[in-house]
Length: 405
Image (tube, rainbow, N blue to C red; front, side):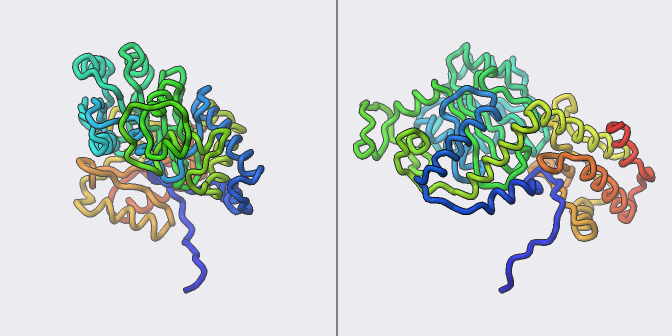
């Protein structure tokens, strides 16, 4: 076999995205030992950097080694005990994922569902909280399956008022949409590097409020005697060793109790993603995603294409483009394949009721920039013309340029 040589790609789908070259360079840095002073200092830097990213003062802010889903599972398996009531607002595929994971934890799961393309009204959430009396409310902020961004501030206030633990999956939204962990009363939030943060999949930033920490530390752990935590907990054993956040917190804490071998290159990547975001300024990064996302939105509309969902609640970083009917059942995939073959540009399809009905085009992380937007729109126009779809000549690029002007 030859040395691995992936083809060049411009990843303009819903994620993963083209990694910022500075992050790739950071990943190539030499490895050090797990308890080398440089390693422990870098871990401390990562914690400080992600407090800024999440906009929180939480001491327990770090990264879980694994993809974004590892962060989700760590949060839920550490919070939820069998028989606990969990409430999940569902407005897309990833709300169903939270439901599935909570069910696997043995929870009694209740949902508040709306049709795809909408977000959940806080009034319905409040009514469900009063009826269900959940221990945990688990919600996605930005669901890339529908491109909708759920407002969280009112839900957070409701959770605090009713003493409900509030968990948020911010995988697809953090860094490109407003996010205020403390101001919105979030108890746990998790994310991934491969979207707006501009990195590779494989590291899951997480932040935990003191309230969540108390709940998790109050549960019983298999290694209780070995770890010599002191207090005698009363809860059930956390089902996972690797994703047991009480143990992971001890690993990241001042005692550095050995738990697993840190994924060093991914730690470097997570550090560089957060460092770059801090250097740019979080508000500026959100504004950058907004303007390039708006340019892409106007661009596909300039090509005469429809856009799915409630645009008032669309994420900054992904747009769902309705596939023209004249392309037929397989035409959407054929357009995606032609974009990849002729222009080395990847866009996404979708799931469930939207499969085969929309393309999902992302403008996030390193690809939230003008040249990426204009190149994608120009290529899409050419591929649509070749497929027999009549579109205005230069309409996409011209409409995007009006946003930039």
